[in-house]
Amino acid sequence: MKRIAIVGAGFVGLRVARLLAKHAENRFTVVLIDKKDRFLFTPWLIDMLAGKMPLEQITASIPTIAKRDGFIFIKGEVHDINRKEKTFTIHAEGTQKMTYDKLVLAHGADTCYYGIPGAKEHTLPLKSIGDAKRAQESLLHLMREAEQTADSKERARLLTLAVVGGGPSGIEAIFSIKNFIQKKQTDGTIDPTLSLRYHLIQAAPQILPGFSQTAVNIANRELDNHSIQTYTSEAVIKIEKNTIYTVSGKMIPAHFILWTAGIEACPINIDPNVEIVKGYPTVDNYLRLDDSIFCAGDISNLKTKGVHVPKTAQVAMEMAEVVAANILKEDAGARLRPFHAETKGTIITLGKTGFVDLFHTLAFETPLANKLRRAFYRFRFKQMTGLDS
Image (cartoon, rainbow, N blue to C red; front, side, top):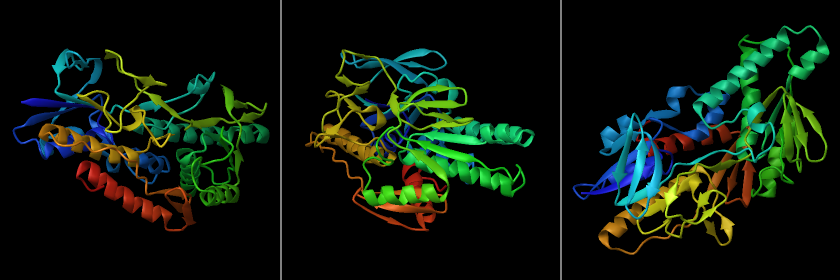
């Protein structure tokens, strides 16, 4: 029986495994491999950071899904893919070599610090449950330290926070941080009289690159309304403890720094080599590296009409549909389906309000943004896991 192996259980990998398992019958075995045994719905990390959603509502057990849907799950890490032999090595409790007939690479990307001195050492990322918990703990520790500080100048220095990265994640994150602190002040966990300063730092000339000007204007207005100081065209060149240095010479104090400024590919050794661009394997329009290997999601390098395909959960799910369809088409000897990115819209929350952006050309503000986003994400979570959140 043929074996289809999938590396990475994120928005591409888990979706492909579930779609293929429906058609496996006695034709092939589907094997999903990931070093973690829980699927994380990463767009909800923002809500967890804000204290709005508990852990159990944003994750799902992959072994449970595998047993229900009829595919095999192996908890481990994949190394050393041999394209000639069609093998790869799994590091789990031990080491084993596995063969494949078709291989899907969907192992994602990590936080990228661009080699900026001090960035990794003095900032917190937001890519995992642990990251969100550490951010909350760091914020609470900072607040309690400020409460116990008698000197007003020192207290003011402690109560300065920053988010680096002015894309959707960074903007939603800074509002989530503010919501988390306000919630803790309201319930009496921390002193409600403490006043914080917030900084949002963006290297590009504007926040939300690629979005419509209307969307940018809405976000800027809300940032101003919440007294969040926004810096644009201010690439970070160095970070020291409690201080951010930018390209224009600014020194921005911050005792809490969240880093949402970019991602980089998670490498896997592939032999013989494939075309790699800045760490990302280049795929064709059918999301293939070769006749036996597909590659999709954050790990893949693909351009359409000269523009890089966005690395978002929405695009990853679209890619998963195409990968699964093309594996089935190849098995049936049918013509393959090319991938076309079809990002229909985005919902960005800005505290109690937010906006809906359609095709990055039309945007409108709405106080229902949080409810709309919640409903849409619940739908997506069920698509991914077959479970209600």
